[in-house]
Image 1 (cartoon, rainbow, N blue to C red):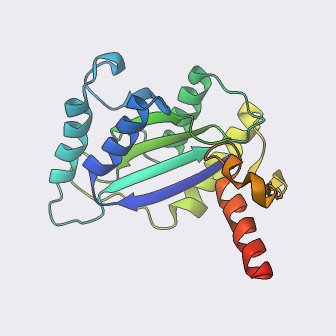
Image 2: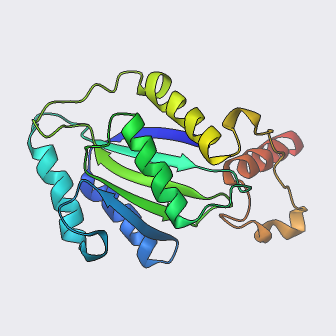
Image 3: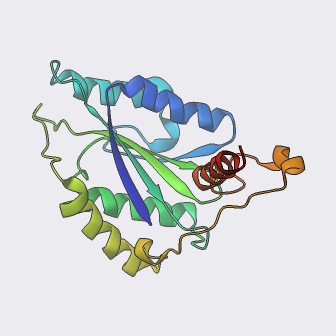
Length: 195
């Protein structure tokens, strides 16, 4: 499992991104944490309003959004229920268990992954300490969850060689069917070497 925490400045952009993926069939809404309405009854407006209201408690702060990505190995076959449990435990472990958050399961790449949209402004309007959260909270949480759920450990993942098709078959590359970054890097290296 790999965890990535990205600060952002727009709740609307983060929620819109995930909701559009849901509309396009490339993602599904899994759960909401810290919301006063049941998950299946939440509207887009309600999802956004809770986060924006929390953000309004600290109006001068620019980066209020925390966009968290939890990526799993293609070998990890996880149900939606398992992903909900993993996300809830992860959020609790990094100190965001009481925060409002939205969880989306994305299906647009070769590996299963989740996007979590939340904020680091607490209910009192104070900024939560996120300094070195990756090293001191996220990494230990990730390792504990890998052990508990029998997930493929991030450090055990071999570096995979990207698939490079013949030049004639270049159209066969499709987003999500293979590791995108590695494939693009390999193609660029190939072109630069042959140019």
